[in-house]
Length: 276
Image (cartoon, rainbow, N blue to C red; front, side):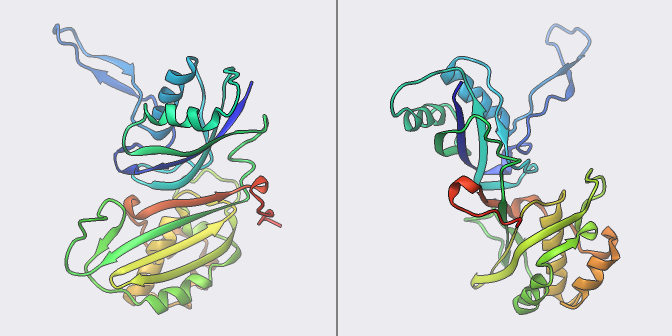
């Protein structure tokens, strides 16, 4: 049974996150019968992919994604995999990807699809991933990229934010940067790189990479760096926040639309494990 690896890009604005969800909802009936509680599929990236792939290969498939992005979060290079009994012949990878893309909505696309080893696991095998949080500043609300940035009217001290960001690099207990109910036994994580750039006037980009992240960790890091950029905190406060191991010590959780999963790396891609 062939296993396929996909790279998927999507605009997360109108999705209820990556992971398939079937909550119980009240269903109203036109004949006047009492409403009933039934399970329904929410619009998630995983679900629309499974429906499109099933339509092509004519069997049920389960798509496993490497990162369970939240509602409103975007991706440039999400990695996912599925297995099918469809034993296609010849150079089918590109044709299969095109066939699935033709059945996907306009806010999600498979940018690469190829055969992979039978035991490929996009979660377990990932050695590093990178996120970017984008902020537009200025008195006018952004229009062109409004779905992909968070807007703030006041300017931010980019240099102070960069000074603070570098202090998060390394292995630390990131309990202060984890949302309540994160569900992890350990809050120790290793950040490989954390930087703040201003590629153009009015645009701030916060890039964070690591082997894995706690729930809302990158959005809380971004919120804390924004506090530094506003002068509410200083770069030197980052050590104190880490040592506190208390969510209340850090900044706000930034809105989802500014966050994008930029890349994921695997040993077979020629990238040595960053966890070493």
